Image (cartoon, helix red, strand yellow):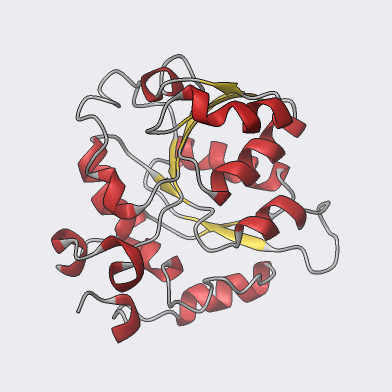
Length: 220
């Protein structure tokens, strides 16, 4: 696939390394411009581009930026992206630690539902509950003992199927976590967050999650 990534953090770095190793054509972008991505491009063979180029003519897009930075994306960035192109949102809301207060999320929107509203394009939520180094290093073959499972939430069945397959190809069991309204089950503070569970454990953790955010994960 031809995959466009927007972001410059550790999750982006892990995905660029893994996706290029699998033979995907990867375009990588951030707010600082292509020159800032030269080292990552040299390491991986990815193509550094402007953000507008990362969403044009691609089969899949990955958005992995701080939650607070979503509001700063160009308003028309996704305007010409066909609705059939899956957009993965990997983000988490850290109000006390990084993002400050986001009223829509505090009022009850899931993190990715808020992102979906901001960018005007349906999103699929995944890669948000795993440490970047584990994403880079701990993918294994299907059936391997202790294979980590990653929840995938979204409303578009066709887009979700593409993302489920991508997660599996990266060496993780993909667990269908329901629609985007259920994606709070994999947000920070939930039982599946940062725990590297297998498929059975991830399903149990998603089921055991509670909707109310604990004090650590709410704006003061």
